Image (cartoon, rainbow over all chains, first blue to last red; front, side, top):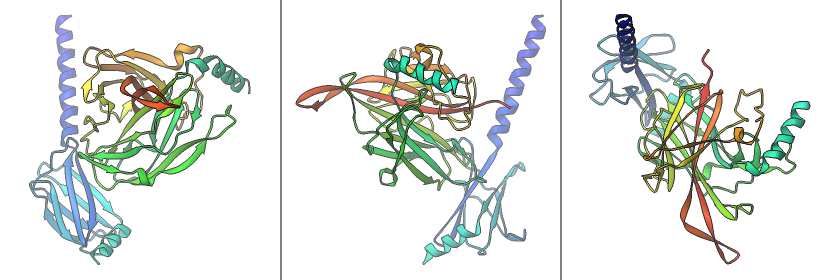
Length: 115
Length: 262
């Protein structure tokens, strides 16, 4: 009986570890447009930056417009590549990915701010 | 109809035991990148279970803290009116819309003007807070705003299932309040609550828990919707009324939302 209990406790601990690892590795992306520049932030739920990871930008026809990388702060900045709905995809080294959709209206509003 | 009459009757019975709660209820407590980034908030002074409104004059202070930065939102408030089904007079409350611009937890807070309560011969000031998770960055929900009194959540205050245990710490002037008494009420106005809760007797209206020596309390929330936690203390100052100094009840109020597990 004791052995069964130990196995049950170990299983729960392992499940807990697996869940917390999965949660910790979930990456998030947020982007905004200011003064003609797209600002991308990528972060884990606890606030740690997603560092030096691929950032790809696609237009509304799924054509890739550019590729860059996040810095040590999880940030990437680049001039607006096209006035369109932009999908920003961040993929880190272990393959986890996340994306953010910048609507065309937001891109246009960011252009206006430049003036 | 029978249920309404029963509700009104119970409201009359319980009127002497009604607990006042400052409320600050957002349209959502979790906002993701694929949702509308504008949330609405309602600021009221209520008896949450009985749905009784009290007049709330324009607050003294209303703002939001995100990533350690406090932004004043007082100017954005718009006046609105509401009442419960059995109230004749409309009461004032306040609303606003807020567009979330950055990821990170948003703690909205309100400091109302002192409310004169003749039945208790004192003023009431309830500092109410609520936290919204924005775009997956779970950073800041456990940070104090620096209010005169406030509840610091020790349980992440969003993404809560019904029956989860909510644990918080009561602070007064930045220090824990040993053995603080915390009142807990369900907001019958919670969106999605189609079956109004009618308390069978007074003690069911307001739940009461005591904090430990570090001001830490817990309560398991048995129903889906918004739950308010209110820790009451007496201020070490007074306010004049007709030439007489009156005591001030200051409340630290915190709101969390629970959802039934599918």
